[in-house]
Amino acid sequence: MSAKPSNHTPTATWSAGLTGYFDHLQARRASASTIRTRRYDLQNLRAHLGAEETDAIEVSLDDLRQYQLGLLTGDASRRGRPLSAGSVARLTATLRHFFAFLAAEGHVAADPAARLERPRVPQRLPGAVLSVPEVKRLLGAAEPSPRGLRDRAMVEVFYATGVRRAELRNLDLCDLDHAERTLLVRAGKGEKDRLLPLTRSCYAGLTDYLRRGRPELMTRHPDSTRAVFLSARGQRLSSMALADSLTKLGRAAGINKRLTPHTLRRSCATALLKNGVSLRHIQLLLGHADLSITSVYLRLDPSDLRRELLLRHPRERFEA
Image (cartoon, rainbow, N blue to C red; front, side):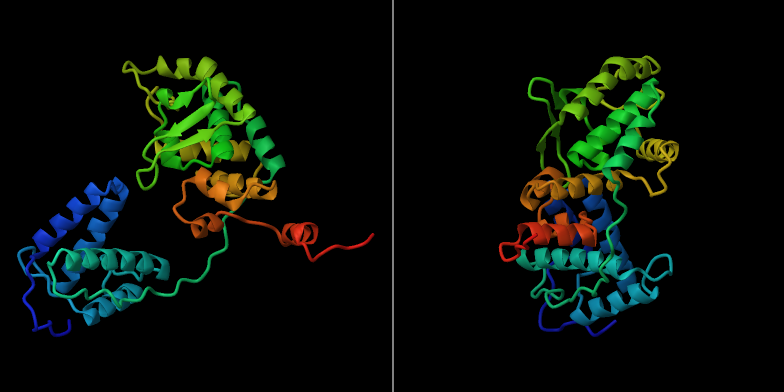
């Protein structure tokens, strides 16, 4: 660790600084996942620096740079394994946010992370995307049983609205407006609500499950639940059970691509873009804070890009 700055005396201990920071995150309605991840990141930094909770927060820019390097080599990670550039970039964002908060609150005289750079992250190709025929095969592979009706309804909702896995699991019966045919996604990522319209086929599949499938599943558990999607035991569907259901359905449909909720989310966004929906509307549907995030979900074939360019660009007009 580098020599500590000597031109000021920090006013906060690690215990006080961390408590104040997480109180700040909760006041801003950060998600439980965000708080949990950032707590892990910052506790790992403190452990790496060898600081106790009662020690003053004395960290330099060089300390943070050495910590970044140690994470990339594995010397500073808890499991002794190197972290990817993407993981270190995410963790760097946590450090910058934490120390900016401390500086703004006067807990440190200067922000040591203000000039901390994020590692360059190689651009990753988008994941798998289902074609329209593949989605039809997937829906057709669902059995006419209570669980089959549930799985078909889940696929319909994923593909029609692009909701996240946790958002679908947390749907309650009161979130469905039958008169308007909309779904209310409560406290999605960033604790923001979204009101999503349902397509005719999605609404039909969802109501068919609610009428014929859900009552059968609900009777298998003594405790009533408000959840839309129930497990075979009548409880709110778990993440593991949801993933397992999609995997089995994909296998039954003969789809060789990796099938996850994110696969259907990307497929929804890509299908909408191909059919002329604006990127801004897709962003609102998916609940993204920034258009650059939305673009990650889109996957267009070169032939699609060429066709759209030749058809729509004002300077491209070809005679037959």
